[in-house]
Length: 441
Image 1: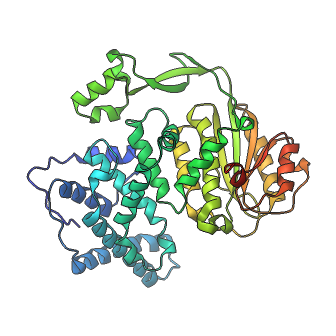
Image 2: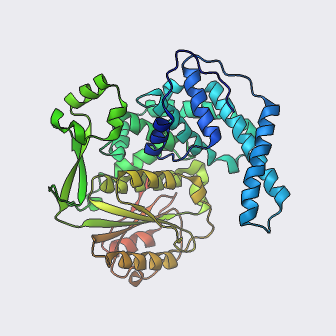
Image 3: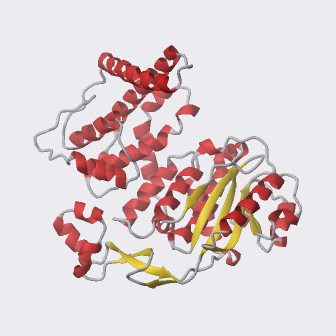
């Protein structure tokens, strides 16, 4: 339901533009509530007044939504209790209604990084979805709805106050092809800050690992080739290449688009042939609950390690495969092969829901990891595998044979260092490092 009337001075974007922006930002299809929120936010920014929350109409809409969703759910799960299912759908939807209205009242769209209001509104949806991860951990969810706009503003302030070097670290993770690197990096920082992790600690660890010569990655060689299968993004060289720039450039006003082209800001896609294989970086991250202790400092450091390794993906030198572990390596695998998938892994590793395991077992985990690495190498597309093992725990140290000849780097992110694990890493040809200690030196 809408809470504004479009003012006369509002020239709204088309539905197709909103759909394209949602796809470009990785939001996908908007729900009805999200779509109404976008239009309300655009109207408010153009001067429209936001009406008070209408409880009666909201409940009526929530009940209708519950009927539709319950019918669909019961077709798939006929054994379920329809009353309980309906109650949950109604409750969750009603919470969303309160959330969107509260944010609509308090959020200043101009504070969201983006090149126009429509893009900013879609990015506001992206940030709200990020906050929704916290719902299951909050008892008074309706009270939290009133805090969401404040939480977003606080995250914006934190990112804007970062040092130039820290902002540059975020820009590196954005990678080439961004419409506006500083704005996209700011959005990424806001997303990370809205997690329960410490953004400053994430960046600190990522930057520290850049100083370690033992972790310098293998560089992959690309040669420009019009028939090449690999695509590399580079800055536009002259106006004759305008037809090669990304679609997002054509969403900008013509004058701004031409100015950016003259300054060489847009990126073009250039086919290349790879003369060498990419490196395989296989990461196994501790997913136990202790990673979230002490204000999530261990999980923040782990995210910094992952952020550092993903830079090789952004630069086109490596592919990252990542698993979480507790008593064994979890089955779900995350794969980063380009800038977009690298940023997706950053969203995953900063999601507190992945740090709820109980028990830490190194032996079974490393066996599973080394076996998976060997399987990935069979494709012949990757080279020089390195296993990056990230943990805050202590456990029995397995024999070197468990790694099956794979080089392992053990990065410990807890309060103390397990010297046996560091010794195992060095015996494999890798390094053992306690980042809490090393990064403070």
